[in-house]
Image (cartoon, rainbow, N blue to C red):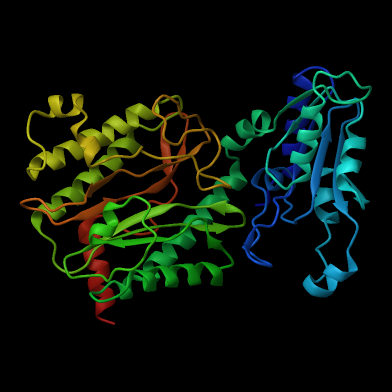
Length: 430
């Protein structure tokens, strides 16, 4: 199912018209980022520009104006023959231009051309990404605010004011893309199970996952986390310098970006024999995830999901003697926060931490069509009487419905300890 970029452009035009007056939107490709000397990091397209156009090319600017006959223009530089020799010809943007009903303007001076296209506009919405034509235009007009030159925008705003709301609610094609990315992530998790044995380095597991993503035509949506023992008690651990030991949990937090859409899945897998107390904490985290997912529906407060998860984690921590006291008192004092220090999840889409400002907040509500991760965890950086150091997190990508939810990644890799053990045993026989 392909994305309906033309419909998205129409929604932008409507939003511009609803603002009153004469308005425009300007978005530019991300700049290349220098890694060292004349070497660059792999290029990543601008998420908002892709959302509206389907274009992943560098050196591109989109201009949308809300005239009586709306104007949609893709501005690209003229072809540089020297660059072609070194890097090859840039793919034609004609198909994307036709798909969104845009004209194409080739120019030696994109900044000047875009400025010309904005003559007569009252307000322009841009991004402030350094090194882009969009940001240069933003700075040009911002410097001239307070002046009254003819035919020059007198107000400059943020493109997020329009695009964030559009991107937050996912359509069918986006849900399908996220689900497909989740399935590929699950394939990678299954593929590394034979590596999950004592002595294997964390980096070996992570490298295999990243390799499999590339084989499937994707790329890691974020730095793959593979963490054992004390490493797993660090929320965003990336050193990958420990070896798996018998009795460890291996926390794998990973996701492929496929067709510009991300997935984000975490599974925590026991290697060898684990204690009853370790199993209790694992079951508490799994119960926390299920309790939070059970509450998901349109208009639910993120705080309600978080507290549902926190209660289950508190119960588990009390059962193994990490916390002492009544459940009501422990929750009131937020005693669980020492061991569950992060939020319950974040929105997911073209960006792994997607639009909407839902990450790290408790007071926002979820709406129908949002894809939101649910990822409770327990982290013990120091051993206790019954538990070694550990980190356990379980995460899935969930589509919010009007009166419930759909877990898009629920079946990509097992979560029940008995099912995980069965998978490990089956793999060990071959």
